[in-house]
Length: 613
Ligand code: ADP
Image (tube, rainbow, N blue to C red; front, side, top):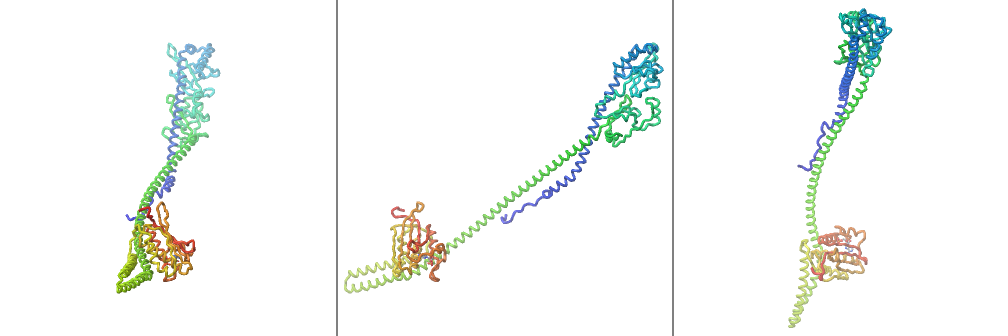
């Protein structure tokens, strides 16, 4: 892998870019659809519930109606067994009318019927619990006709006199001997009594007879209207039954809005009945139809509320799904980005490591080059110092040479005089001088050769003496008084030749500075200090020269800093000395001394003779 190549983030997916638009578009499309479906579902459900409720109410009412009628159906059947009635019917006696009337009244009270009456075979009332009906003739009524023909009758009809709706149960009274019908006993139940059953019902109801005529209704104005237009045949049949005084019935304006299988939505002519669910239940025994009307208006609020609630839940679920998907996508993206960031970090780390390694290598190479150059420079500086010392050395050698010359001449003359003792003295002197010269040249030879950087314990006295020796002539010529105050036998950890080179540089600079001074004193002081529990030598070179301009103190050890004229100073002496001492683990500093001249301090690890190695 190329560490320089940037790892790109993967492009965002189509879903990530479009999820919000998708959510909004989805809502815009799905909300109307959801509204339609939920409204349809809730409407259907509400209608079904209402259907069941109405149907239950109808069944309950039908049951109660049935049991109510059943109760009365048996009353006339029982009454025909009543001997008092049978007797009254058989002899048509009106004398007993009073008694019979009381008897019938008793029966009416006990059975809670509306009227109980006895008819003769012509339909004339023989006795009745209603005094006003005592003279009525029921000859034309279906219940009389049925009974006179020998069968039980149960008929709905309007009251002959007062027009009150009633259900009449009739039963023929047979002669015990001939089995002929001798009278008819009738029990009338008021329809209003039967209607009481639906008084407390939620569902408004109506009952139509076999011709579709409303004979009972929760809405009184619909009574005796017809559910459908009557044909001539029907009208004739109605007329024949004489159930109703008239044969014309206004039509109940019923508009079927929607057929719903077993039920239908209809509009009926009364406020509150414009949209009702109509359920019908045939009362087959009676030949009637029972209708119940559930108000759909009441459902509208429930349907709207449920639809709104379901829409809210739907929007919540879709929004929740949207949030979850969006969060998931974001999370995935963050995860991928985090992984890529880690890879990028790893890559950057590798790149950095490579660069650091390359730079380190470069730096190492430069350092090596620099070290090489520095070594060369130090050597060159040393040679330059050597050049400077040439005069001094020549003088140093010239002096013993002249002395050797003189001693040799003297020896020659003493030899001619046979004074061997003096010859021997002169030869000994020559040997001493030759030794001294050899020492000087040996030192020069040693000083001139290249050295490595290795350090060892070397004698500080030797280094100081060698350096002083090389500047001694100049001191003499320039009348400089030299003061050396150093402990004997101190050893320092250094390269002897290089240490000498530094000392020569410090001494030469001091001599240069004192060229124009009136007082010319050069002090070399050594003292042992303790530095971090380690002894170190502090060698001070103090002069009485010009001193150092305070502005120059910072640049003193900078390469090529010199205040000497062109061609006189190179400005490398102190800079090289500094690096030599630094490489040996010591320090070199310079400042103005207390007496006005300059003071340089050289510090190196040392060991004193009394302490041992
Ligand atoms: P150079 O001797 O070639 O100038 P150095 O590095 O040895 O180079 O010295 C740098 C400068 O430091 C000198 O030019 C001088 O200005 C100053 N200097 C060094 N030693 C002394 C001293 N003992 N007294 C006054 N100035 C000094």
